[in-house]
Structures are given as structure tokens and as C-alpha cells.
Length: 203
Length: 389
Image 1 (cartoon, each protein chain N blue to C red):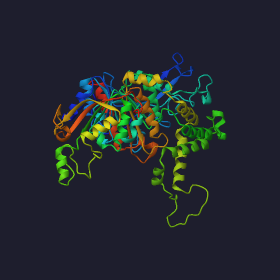
Image 2 (image 1 turned 60 degrees about the horizontal axis):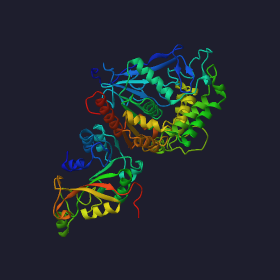
Image 3 (image 1 turned 120 degrees about the vertical axis):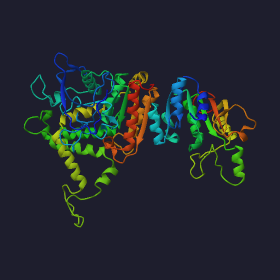
Image 4 (image 1 turned 90 degrees about the horizontal axis):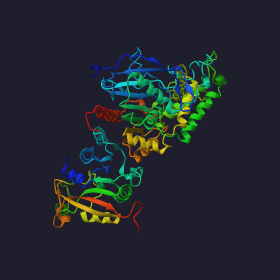
């Protein structure tokens, strides 16, 4: 399993009912079912990935995350996983609001656009292409990039508290601490707890 | 043990078995009893010694037991031969496949055209009204007779998928997997309206004779063919009709200026006329009334415990829709998905891109077939204990 998926898996409590948004080929969910006693559903839009997920025996719903989340009832899952998914959605704010409605816990991993390599490339006048963001600007699925500081502002604004944060190194391995993470960490994974209970964020 | 691999299914035969007699009548959901109940069915592939490789095929409104292979002419295969056969998604090298004509049918299984033992005449409208659960009860009895307690899966399109859903809800744990394609858990007013007009066309035909038309008169031919023609329009998408026929004129050269007249001028009119006409040779008008009524009243999620039972039993569901289907559009499939998913049941869903409308489930569409193949393959592995699940 990819190192960053391993980091995400470790943030998912044992025995949870998990909704994995952007589940890819179902590797993470299969791992959670097999090794952490979880049950779950994957949501994926890529046809080949959906077939691979089905082949693993993981229930898969071929839905567009930007439109299909109303399918899921309030608090119908223990955990929603957004593994390298949020930055590919049309409306990350709306997705976070929906996710908060669906489960009390969210595990979110995302690349950090504020990484020093990206800043350096931008300073030279080019769009960053790196191990964590391997696509040219005109073909990238990552359409809503954020720095860790920006991401954490959205997290707070949408009514979540960060329970744990694991920084990711260029290979996606977890690191608990780094000085100036927004500069040195290529990505991060978070365990988020929603504040309040269900419904909209007060205020 | 699996059968030696064959490239094609080849010639198959419809068999018949009496499942209920006077001493052991079928108890219907309505409380009435029915006997005798004879069923026409076909099987493909070989039942494993552990009887753990059975797949039940449930047919749609006008289908029959002859799902795959052929009856002598390889050019005229069964209605789901695209899906069922050696190496196909419902792989007869691996599965023991059973398909029977539905209760209330007219292709070998007891229905309104069968002889009522009380009178010695065909039942006609004296045949009892049926519930989806009655159709499933007969499938289950046939399986028991064939030595199967728990099939790997039941699979069906349209009304076929509705039987599968009924089965999963009513007999939790019996199906390891349930495959519902272009199906519905509750007809809309528009769906019922189409069925109502089809039934009206039949019963208002002077040849209907209150359902007792089995003598020399030939029955409500005009009504039944109109019902079929209208229904057939709903089975195809507007795009499919446009691509197949456009505004082409039948039997007239392109250079001849069209002169308006009544009659079968447009190619689409000729096609519908043929559909309506050929239907008369193979279908009974009363069966059309009875089976469409079963669909109208089908509503398995009214009892919220139903979906919860599916979840508790762990039956895996595959729900497929086609984006151009307007008979049972994706909203129908999503209703099934939502009910099962909210209850916590494992459910897989895909909307398949296809321009051909409701009838897409009968066609060889790569995304569709690949999905069924992956799902059934996995279900079989799980059932055989080869993988966790």
C-alpha cells in the first residue's frame, strides 16, 4: 500500500463504518476491512478504478462527489475519508460541509502547495511540478490547491477541530513534527472531529 | 468440479417440472392457493457438488425460460445470450445458471392461460392476482427441487431486477449477491400510467371477452399489439429511435417525393407494427395484465425493516442503470441504492453510458458487462471461501 494511504489508515479508528470519497482502486478500504475490522463504501468516478474496487469485494458507488453526496444520510458513517481527493473537487467548501453532515470524524489528506520547492518554482515564474503534484497545470486533476495554512483555515471555518495532524514527506511517509510545516512538509493528513452535532455550523 | 470448457453454449432445451400439486398447493401472498403449478425452465453449466455455484436469472415482463444458447438455430439465441455463456459475464464454465418462466407467464409456466382444474377451462381472469413475492416463491421452490439452498446470486433486468430485490428483502441471507439492472423499487405515476393504458388497450378490445378469449376468436389481438407497440417505445430512447429509423420512409426510394397518406409509411411505424404483430404469436394478453399489475404494486421498502434485514444478512447488491433509460431511469436505481445504503447494506452502483434506453440491459455494452463480470466473479470467490467476505 502507498505510504500515505498507510498514514490515512492509521488515523481511522478500528471497527468504523467508513465512507471513502475518491476511493481509487479500493486498496485503502480493503485494508481497513481486512486489518482494522471496518465496513465501508467507496465512492469513485473513474471507471477502471470502480471495476478494481468491485473486484476487491468493496462496495463502490460510481458517483460524482461534487453532486452525489446528498445520497448519504446524516451521520450514517463513523468516518469519511478524503484521501488526496478534496483538491480535485469543484467545490471543496461544499464537500467539507457535506462530509461534516455525514460523519462525526473525517480523515483528510492533501498536498501542500506552500512547500518550499513549490514556492521556489513559482518564484522562478513556473507552475510547480513535483512528486506530490506530478501533473502539468493544463492536465492536472488537482484544481483546488491550498497551502496547509489555507487548508486549516477551511477546516476551522467549516466547523471541524483538528484532532491529529501527521505531516507527509515526499514519499508520503508520516512525520509527526517538523519546524515550519507549511514550508517543509509536502503534504499532511488530518483526523478531524466535527464541532457541534450535525446540521449547519452555527454562525 | 467445473464442466470442460466449451466455446459456446450450443443447443439447450426447456424442461418442465410440476412444483405444486393439489396436495401441496402454492400459498400466495394474497392468502389464496394455487395448484397445480408447473414451471418451464432451462439450466446451463453444471451444479457443483457443494451446490454453491448457482446463479438465478429472473426475466423481465415478456421474457421466458430460454435465456441463453439456442433451440436449434444458432442465429436465434436466447434473450440474454450476450451475458450468459462460457467465458461470458455470467460464466457457465463456473456457474450453474437457472432461468425459469415466471409464475403467471405464458411460456410453459402456470398462468392465466393454463387450465383451471376447477372448471376444465383456462383460468382467464379467475387466475389469482399475484405479488412479487409469489414469483420469488416459485423460483425458490424450483431451486430446492434442483438441490440448491443458497444461490450465489440472482440477477435480472427491469421486472427481473424487481424479483431479485424482493428476494433479497424477503429472504435475507439466502442470496449471497443480488444484481438489479434497470430496475425499480416503486413505479412512478408515469410508469403506472403507461401500464394502465396498455391494459386498457387489451381489455377494451372487443376480442377480450372478459378474459375468456381462448376459443376460436383469437383474443384481443389489436389491443395486445397496441400495448406492445406503446411499451416498446418506452423501452428505447429517443436517440435510439432517431438513429435506427430517423424519418426514413418505408419501401420508397429517396428520390420519390413523399405524399402524405395514412398507413405504415415511416420506417419506425413499420418497425412497431412488426413488434406488435410478432408479439401476438408468443404472448398471452392476460399474462400482460397480471404481470404489469405485479409491478404497479411492488413497493418493498414501505417496511423499513426490509432494507435492515438485507444489511444484517450482508447480501451484496449491484445496482446498474443506463443513462438513456427513461422507463426506469437512474433515479429509480438510486432509490434502491439509497434505501439499501441508509440501512447499512453493502451496495455497488454504476450508471452505464448507453444510447439505447431501457433495453440496454439486453445488449453487449462493455462497461456494463465488465461490471457484472467483476461483481459476480468476486461474489463467487467469496461464496466458495476463496477470499474473505
